[in-house]
Every structure is written in C-alpha cells, then in structure tokens.
Image 1: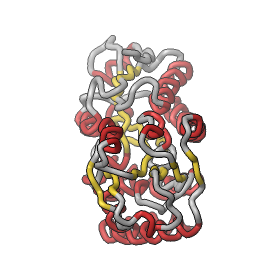
Image 2: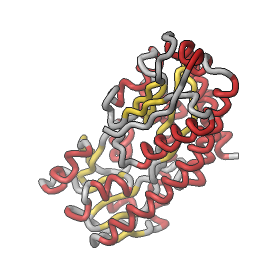
Image 3: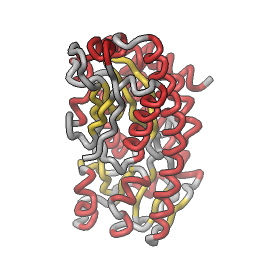
Image 4: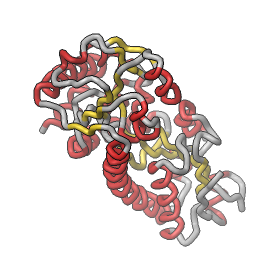
Length: 322
C-alpha cells in the first residue's frame, strides 16, 4: 500500500497527538492510489511538507484501508483520525444540505458546479463545524452521463427502461422519468446489463470506462446530470493545536489542491470519454428536447429538496442563481 508522509516534529506533535515526539496525523481516504482524487491528496500532502519544512506529518491511507468510507466522517469527529476524504452527498441522510450537489440537473457542467459550490460551501462548513470538523477543500467528479443502447431523443424514450439506481436520488430520478429503477452497485454493473436486469444508467465517464461499458451499451449521452464532489476534512481540535504558521500553510495547500483538483477532474472527464470512443461507443450531445424534459425532472427534485431543507436550502439556491 502506497502512503504519502509529511514530517511533524517537536512540541507541535505533542499538541496534535498528545505524545511528545510522535510522528503523525493520519488521513483516511476511500479511493485507490490510481484515482485522481487520491493523487491530488498525495500532492497536497507533499505541498504541506515543503511549505512547513517537514513540520507536519500526514500519513495518507487510501482505498478505505484504515477506515471504510461510511465511517470516515465519524472517525474524524471522534479523533480516530485527524483528517479524511468523504463523498459529500454520502452525508445526505444526516442533513439534506449535504445532498445539494447531487440534485439532478440543478448544476450541469463545471461552471455551474463551481457556482453551486460557492453558494453552498458556507452551509456545509457550518454543519461540519457543529461536529468539531473543519472543511479544507472540495473537488468534483466528472459530470454524470446517460448510458444506453437505445436512441434517446426526448424523455419519452426513457419510459419503461430498466434503470440502474444506487441511492434514493437516482431511484427518484428514474421514477420521474418513467424508468424502472433497480439497485445495482458498481462491481455488479456488467453482470446487471448482460443479464438484462438493467438497460440504462447515469454515471460518470470514469465509472463507464472502468466498467468497460462498451461491452453492454453503445451510447453515452453527455447530459452532465450533476457534478458530485468529494471533500477533505480535518479535526478542528487537531487543526487548533497547530501553530499559526503551520495552520496557514495547511490552508494555502488546501486552496491549491482545490484548484488543481478541479483541473484534474476536467482532464479526467475528457480522457475517459475518449476511452469510451476508442472502444466503439458513441459519445453524443443530448438533444434540446431531451435536456428540456430532464430539466423538468430536475426542477421537481429541486423543489423536493427545498421542502426538506427549508430556509437554508432556499438561501443556497438563491445565491446560486444570482
């Protein structure tokens, strides 16, 4: 297992870990080393090392090797680890505000996703702060696209298709579009298509390429349904134990990692779509009729999200749309 290490020495270590001369902050991440999110985090840790002259040590534990994804936020809150990476909307069951970046067709594309992040960042940070957690930065996944072997020119063409769902949001999307949702996890995608359990899915170019989608579908519609994000978080207590100079170095490195991560995501999207094409899939722009119908579905789901979030959600949407 690959790990990235930054040195933290002396009295600062005693404050962070409670043991003079101890070595580390630990950071739990859910994705393998090859994932661009993990690569960005590795570079983030190296940037901190350089900026602090080896004054802060962070050991990055990828692929859920230290803490499994659903438990990472709790591990940071309880002090089991000092830092972690979490898929933001995974926390939607705790508070629906966390699900804002997975509302279908609210933010379709990177520019809209950036604006939505700016509008929602403070609300997300404040909820984390209630649990003693500090938000450092967030990086998006490539936008979600539609995979099918059927030609789709409008929403009516989706009616009756057996659709791969993986959470409550995608199930609700399927229902509103007239599709029939079936819960299928990523490792089961190829078998689900080959056996006819599902006929269509919405997921990123990354998942499509990694699943070899060309073996079971031949069309990718670049509908950019939503642009979900991962966030990097740290224990507020551990952060407060750092001296002012180290704190600022950490924040500066985080800002750099956020900008770099957004660039990496765009590059990942284009690279993975190219892989789909190289393997015989049609990478298609959706028709206006299809997008109009999908936006209507998105409007309904946005309204439902606003019902769940109340004034806080209204403030986010108002800021986003300004």
